[in-house]
Length: 512
Figure 1 (spheres, rainbow, N blue to C red):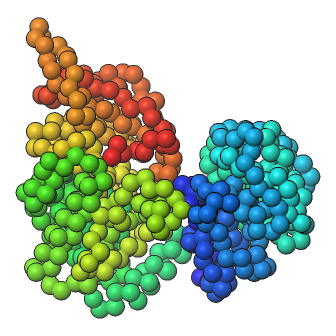
Figure 2 (figure 1 turned 180 degrees about the vertical axis):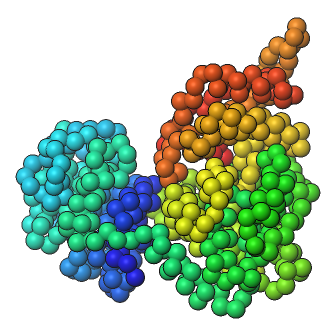
Figure 3 (figure 1 turned 90 degrees about the horizontal axis):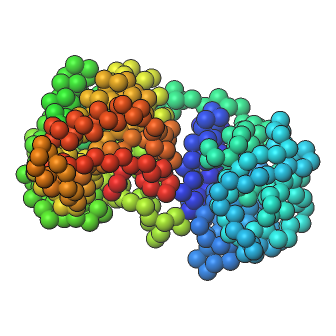
């Protein structure tokens, strides 16, 4: 096993980002439940621990607390935001509500020679997100940085190798935050920084073989990056024991079915079956408007189709899926984790409890850019590895309100125009995602000399690295004009095109 840093998850929406930043430093990270026993962390051989942030107050009756024994393991601990407050609370300090909350950018003034800030200037702009603050230091600690509203914005006890910071170094808004994390990993924990995707591939192939044995695996292949890399990785491990099923759920983009079948015939030697389940999906989704209900229906219906496919494929025990880390963190509910529910994903939130197939999710611990690195290492073509993400529920979560064939047709045509123009201009390969959203509202327009009362299409184009945060892309005005003109002129039923300029957070990338 590689050197491992444990990230204890106390409910922060940035927990996955912390893990991702660690991996950017070529150090393997693993996320654990906040209450994981210290004995398990020791048995797993972790060489450092990071407490994530979280939405609770340390004094709240429902506040998540770690196993106290983690402080006796003798390994370095870094507390971030809520993690600083936990460390203060558990080790004899005092935490109270601040007179002024700190949210957004602030100025950090660094004092002393803490190894956490080695090589950094004495002043940094950092991202804060907290209402409580440490008001009394635990015994053995001293302050090493402050902000305008907190004299203990960074503290340390070098004798026990305990460090804590009130801000979030993992987000891009924090100036030189990755260097703070690197200082903790290499300067304090002694990480060698030699973990790579090749290590992951070798380990995962062995795990798949041990898990599956001689059983068969059925995998839902969408043609997207995640399912394609999952299929390639599983196929590398077990070969002919894998059968892929492409489900036409009636919620696909224009020409998607033909594209995927052609792509995999050209590039793969994988057993691929095609199931046309359009009628079943449309019947089950008829009249459904609530986003979460849509996702769960789509997830359950996928499993139904897979299970029926077994009759022609033969007995299979495992269902392979391209579930990623962001899918998991956004689907966590309060009942299992202190994080707030954002939305469920069909991969993780919509599967029935009594599913007949066991799940096989080899990419569950990876971010999208890591998945692409795995795909490249496995020899997948560029058109697969760098294809933009497409949600498992398909156009079902890009069509707001109830789903009908008419609305799907309008959305497909509009989305195809956007795709064409993004490809023609070269912008397709420069952004994270670009797609259209159908809005269930009508707007007055004019075609010729006649009044046109028709639907609205929203254009969503974002830049991101790991899908945990994203910003809207500033496309050239000429390109936007071309897209808008083509959609309103060529797609019957559309009178207006609007541009979504929301970042994540506060919005999500998808609308539902």
